[in-house]
Image 1 (cartoon, rainbow, N blue to C red):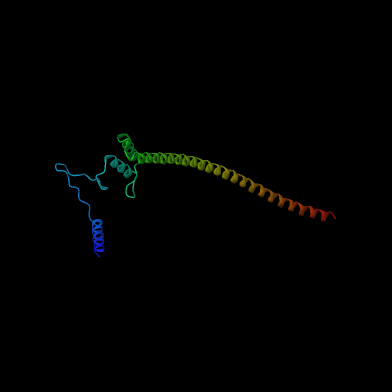
Image 2 (cartoon, rainbow, N blue to C red; image 1 turned 90 degrees about the vertical axis):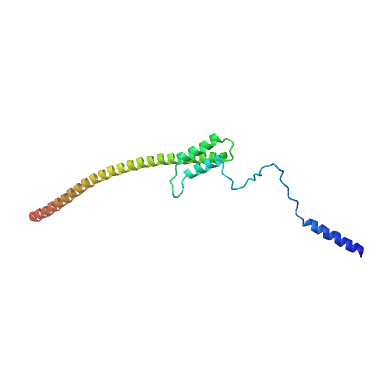
Length: 167
């Protein structure tokens, strides 16, 4: 019985020790406050430049200014070459370059299409003028053929009359 009681007491002490809280570390006297970095700490200068560049990219309320955004990203790259935002700034610059090349390509395509459109309009006008002139000449020819047919009918009638008279 004593052994069982001793086992129960040891088990009870083990359970209490498992639930115990570790001791708190006491600060060393003379040491300043400990800075714990948090997620919401003050933004760094490179982060501010990145946010500024992103804000220049525009929003539903504000139109985009790609030149200012590019300048912000390039400033970030030149001032803070080891920044953790370097890759993101380089990506934004590449995207801005791609956007600019796409816009210039689109502009050249638009100019090419406009010139092609103008050429086609000119060609259509010239064909239309030619067809109208041809139509007028065909109408004149048709009228002349109609008159010739009338003349032939009259001559045929006269020929028939002469033949009847001669008989």
